[in-house]
Amino acid sequence: MNLIDAFNRSGTSGRRLASVFVFLLLQIAFAPQSIAAPRYPTIFVHGIGSEGTIWEPMVQYMHANGVRFGGHVHYQDNDSAKPLVVEQDARSIGDLSNAVYYVTFSDQARRQSDPIVAEAAELSAMITRVRSASFSNSAKVNLVGHSMGGLVSRAYVQNAGVYNARQDVDSLITIGSPHLGTSLSVVAGLGLFLPDLTEQEIAVNQTVSPTLQDLNTPRGQFSALH
Image 1 (cartoon, helix red, strand yellow):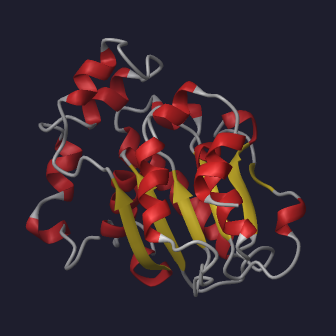
Image 2 (image 1 turned 120 degrees about the vertical axis):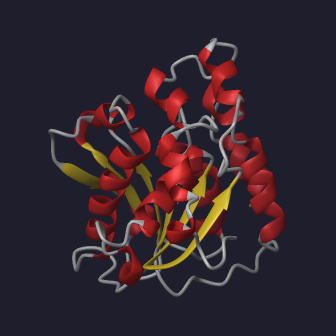
C-alpha cells in the first residue's frame, strides 16, 4: 500500500482537504516499502480545526511498512475534565517502544484565551502517557506537528522551564506551520474554510499574536528548526 492509497481509503472529510499537502510531502519523504523504524515513539500533532485521526492515512501507510500503531491519545469525549485515554486496535499488539501515535486536543483547550499554550499543556500530559511503562516505556519521543500543531509542539519544547521537553523530545518536525503568523487565519474566521474555528484559534495564529512573538524571541529560538 502506498500513501495515496491509504489516503483514499480513509473516507471523505472536509478536514482532510486542509491536509492533502501533508501527506504528499511525507510521500516524498518516505521511499515506498523502505521505512526504517524510528528510535523512539513518534507523536503526530494535528493542526488548527482538525483532530488526530487526520493522520490515519499516514499511520496506515507506516503500519503497512512495518511500523506499529501505538494508539490515539485523547481526553474522553474530548473533555479535559475527563480521563486521558489511549485508544488502541489490532495494530497496537507487540513492542510499542518505537510505535507511532496521534493526539487530539480537548474542546476546552481550543477555547482558552491562548489555545497554543493550553494545548501545549495537554501535549505534556499526552507525552507522559506515551512514555509510560504501560505503552512505550521510552525515555524520549519524536514530534511531528502540522500547521498550528507545529506551534503547539514548539511551545512545549521551548518552554523548558515549564515542561520537561529538553529531556524527553529527541526531534521535532513541523509541516506548514505559520511560525511568523499568518493573515489566512483571518480569512478562515470569515467561514470561507474550516468554519468551526474558535475566535481564540484565529487570534493566536496572527502575526501580532503575543504567543508567536514570545516563541520567536532570541531566548526561545531553536538552534535548528526542520
